[in-house]
Length: 337
Image (cartoon, rainbow, N blue to C red):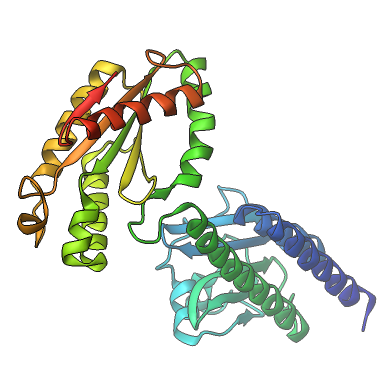
């Protein structure tokens, strides 16, 4: 193999090894793409080297090198002619000359490109993006270059799949599987950060701890599966009833907890009363026969930083005590100590 081709393969092998190592350290996609773009640009010395992906949030030009904003014909989009052709054929495009064919000219992403080499990033036979090289010289790319670019495209597809799986696994570690709310582990992590942040910026913070009254009686009469339906419905209702910045957790069996940033004690009590009314409008099959008052009710304890405590442990103890007092009073009430 000629020395120049050998150098390309060595560079890309090194880039693949580096990307795999960094992916294990939870590198961002932009960082991984940057590794490949740098090595491709150095190995091929093209006029343009780009890695473009289409993700769930839309289009994303992850990395590029060798093309200026003024030299690019248009923005990268999912409906550009190049993407349409890749989606149609699911195969690489290698053009030794773009100058004589108006159709081929539409595949070039920047002015002055004479040769174009492009490989799709395929995941489950769906085009999720592409790797693009171009040169101002005609006939700049060869069959071996197509194989090399397809290798990189396959590697990027694999890293994207791994990243997606890792994200799913990570989500499972911080989410309650029944309700989809954050779990108690995530609460303990967040409160360690949220209280110091509130202190630093001189903002209040409140906790609401919500308990479903007499859920055990309901489960004994109606079965655990129906009780799980209550938990899911309560979780969904709370999620739709709070602000974007609020955080909702399933704390234990029938308990949920909310972190309300920027909310002082007075406003927290008001928020708790409002949520209790919203939850009180929910109806559940079998509640009339199983509940002391004929319907599912909710008790809420309230605690606020810095009014009730300035440390995590003190705040949690206060909200626990407030909820306990609400339960001892017969439930269906809001208590703030």
